[in-house]
Length: 222
Image (cartoon, rainbow, N blue to C red; front, side, top):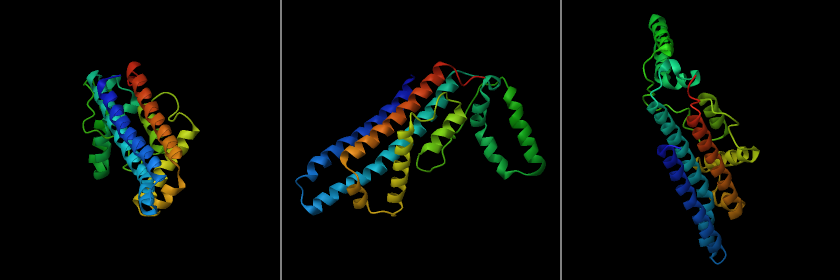
């Protein structure tokens, strides 16, 4: 695995390990704290949703950006690039079509499609990752698998789908002020939170492994 991809996972791993440590400290402190202190500490369990969701989003963005950079180092010609990845390389052009009309729009379409058989080396330009700014959940991974053409399932298992739904849903409700952090913190035990983080870590490793196999097998080529 290239160092650039390794560093993305290493940074994610460090982030969630800090959350794990905070939760375990909280668990021991709750036993002997007064009520006010205990409620403040319980709020840290709720905050963990926001911390882990942010770490996952940064990781997915960083790893996929690094992956595109690694593909560029292989000096692949557009004519040899997988058709799915062509959509990534032409993302800026596709975005510009919404601002064009009439003959200009048709000329731009022709220009973009003619580059499919170009001998020029691929350049992804500005990193347009298949994310939409929303909290990461199952749909994002399914889209990533589809756009890149990764092999296998987008997630390791059903429990990981549920973990992502819990992470995204609870994070959004907290961030938008739709639920009380204390209520969330009281509804979850430390083992619950550690289990959630473990499932999210497994999702991250699953993506890392898919990217590794993708590069090793040159699956970005036609």
